[in-house]
Image (cartoon, rainbow, N blue to C red; front, side):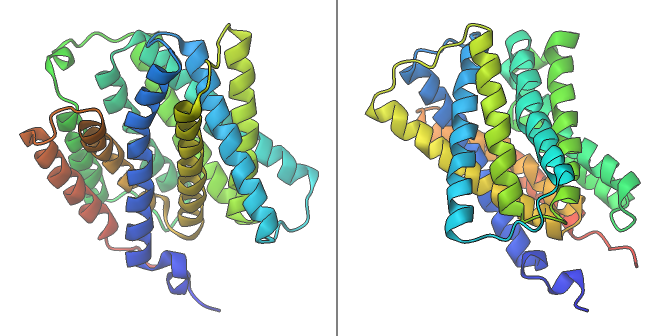
Length: 311
């Protein structure tokens, strides 16, 4: 029987290339979402409307993947009540609940703090994997790698507001809880994907989670705005990047140790900052961006090059 390392999606260069592609796509969502808010007249503190916009994005992403799954005849296996229940739970946690708490946190905390605290999800993923998987133990090298990567996220987001060390449960607390939910749900998704095609699983969890977000947003008075060609094109782009990134990420998690994949999450705010600079006309050649990228890459190297424990 072939070992896990022989699988195409377990080859190091394949993992690195796909993980970086996913983080570039997610990073591009930063300026795209900001532009979408401006086009649809969604205010910074209009959390309900932001949930509606996110719900539309994820529901559409799920529909795209469902169509692709049918066209490519992805094998779903035997559909049981247990599998249906698992996918529903995954969608309501990984997509709905996680984003509800994240948007709630952003409403009561600064965007800079939210971006940094959201990166704690990588720590949660590595810690949870340590207790769940015998071949993904937390080592000193992994701990140092995660710390170095987190420092990179801190630097790329650094400004004077970070010197305010106030902490609120609704603000910073909600963002940290959202990061924990995402970490736990990702590991839960890894477990589910062992018995069902990763694309099919991702398609339905995005559709279910997106629909739930849409309902919650409308329930609390959110609006979808008046779509024109520009805003609709942007929504379609966001849906496409979500469907591609989440599907590929699920495949990577299915075939690799959690820590080897999730460490790349530290690249998202770095790419987000760089792409926002390009598309939103902000300053790009700041020293902190270069330092952050070096630190994040160093952290990724330390974690992915950790000596694998023997089975």
